Length: 375
Image (cartoon, rainbow, N blue to C red; front, side):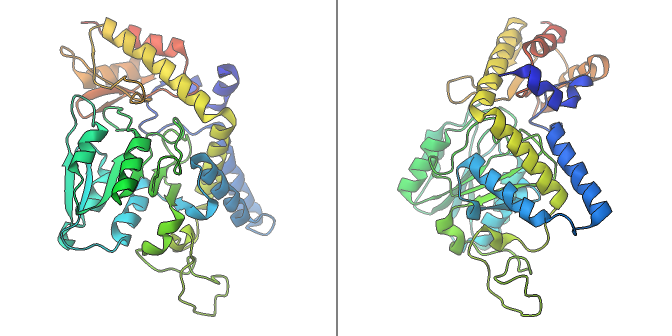
């Protein structure tokens, strides 16, 4: 990739060696500019001169392109949890059914399903094994009563990347719905909802998409739109919604049936700019660069005596590298790097975590390794 042309689009590089895109990533300049442009236009002209909702439809098409979906299968969410909650609370459950997930999911992909226990739905959690949750273990947990398998595309604390294509194919063969929390992969690794047989997907924009916090995308396979009941009714999700005085209670027959009211237009337009940048750079180029950086990081960490938790097997490696020191305090390392050297990583689940992106350089990776205390 042409890093020299990409780095100016990330002004954070002027202030930090930022390697925490698995946390809250910096907004790229195009996303920030789109948000500012919306604010100026809304302030100076209201909606007289610009049709913001027409622009939002362009963002919907970009989001659909990113995951190889149809635009009518995609709508906007305020966060990942909202989309997962639409699935958990929108399906018609029967007592005795179960949901299969892992015991290392981010809470966004746990609590919506835990909330079904009062309806007699069991949550089955597959344990992590040395930083991995092998697909075969997830498959072993599926029973005749399993309704949904829901997993993260990439696990937040280990960086383990799930073989979504393999798992989706098995779910399809078994007649089980497949739901994906994609926030730790979307923008860094390819996700193809068709090829991976994904039924539902949710992801906020503030991590690897380098977009705004509080605005993301939700996908529902067109064949399931009619089977997922909206959790609440609103004016914007109805057929003939613009005919305000005619109360026609009929949900739209696409993903917009989940849109209860007006959009977060500043967020949507900003998200569109970030997605456009990802598409322009190319997701395959981004993933190759991220894997190159993390491979180099893993090598340096091991040379300094750190234990790398993250799987680096082909297809399982991601942009997240979780590592452990057996002699140093992780929180002290984190604070020292940020305060003294302006290097931003994270601590998650007792592990140090680095997560570089498309604009990070080899030199930034090497500097992190050099400044970590030795063993």
